[in-house]
Length: 193
Image (tube, rainbow, N blue to C red):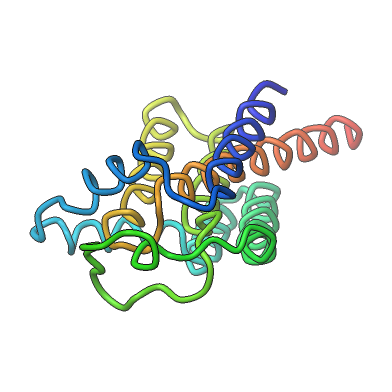
C-alpha cells in the first residue's frame, strides 16, 4: 500500500520538524509566504476550509448515502470522525503551539485557534475524505477532491491557525488513514462476495 507509506512518511517527517524547540527558517519562510497573502482571499479561503471540519464528515457521508453508496457513506463517516478525534489526541503528544506563539507578525484571520497545533485536524480530515472518496469518483472529481484537501491545508496557514509542518503532518495522517480505510473496505467487500 504505497499511499499508506507515503502518508506515514509525510506524518513522520513533519512530526520530527514539529518536535524541534525552535522553528526552522524554511518553515518560517513558508508560513510567511502563505499567511501574508492578501486579505481579499479570506472569504473564499474560509469556505474551502470547512472541508476539514467535523461537519464536512457528516455532509460527505450523507451525500454518499443519498446517492446510493452506503458502504462509502459508512467509510467516510467512520474514517473522518476517527481522524478528527485522533488528531486531537495526537496533539497532546507533540504539544506544539499555534503560530502566534512562534512567529511575530502572524496574521490571525477570524477567531484565533485554540489548543495545540500539530497535526492539523482540518488537513487530516479533508485528506481522509478525499482519499476514501477517490475510489468512487471519476478522474476530474478525484483531482478536485485532492485539490480541495491541499487548499484546506494551506487555508489553515493563511488564517494563522497552523504552521506548515502541522498541515503537512495532517495531510500525511489523512492519506494514511484514508488508504487504510479503503484497504479494509475492499477487503471486506471481497470476502462478502
